[in-house]
Length: 109
Image (cartoon, rainbow, N blue to C red):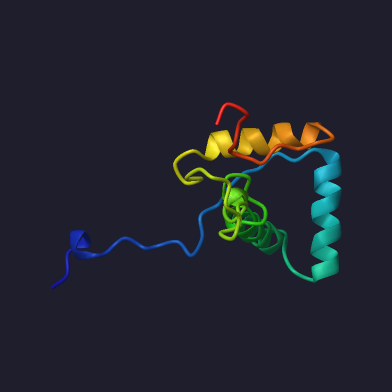
């Protein structure tokens, strides 16, 4: 004999979300829905996935773009891993003048 409390709750396939769109955004959603021959929900799902991929891609993520900026063949005379701010500042300052100084080296050295 089964009792009502023995039943596991039914799970939804998807959770409904309410979004308020401006007229231009609604027109864009309608256009993409027609172009892709799919549902509005699928367009929004694909948009979320694309945004997630974009922000996790080092080419598009501001913090991750600094990876590899300094070539390992460069010898700036300092430990760039420890003194990256000094190296980047020296590189920027050197780009301002006609006679760039070597990044990481100052006249007092």
